[in-house]
Image (cartoon, rainbow, N blue to C red; front, top):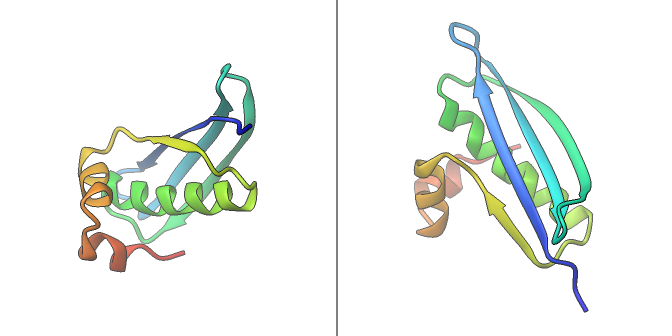
Length: 96
């Protein structure tokens, strides 16, 4: 039996400041929080620039926690489309 896990992520960039924050929350199938964290990112200009490393850290944390059945939710349509289409531009621009 596996535990279904949903990951919600969101990120924001402060205007005129090149740093951003990302939030990740993992909940199980009944909504209980399993893990949550906040991470800061540097050298960002736009909100979607913060969403990409946020997604990468969400995937890394899910792997570290041995979550094998996850659903990831993001409100950044550009990020979701790039991820779903295996965009090479998206994949090569993501870095830790």
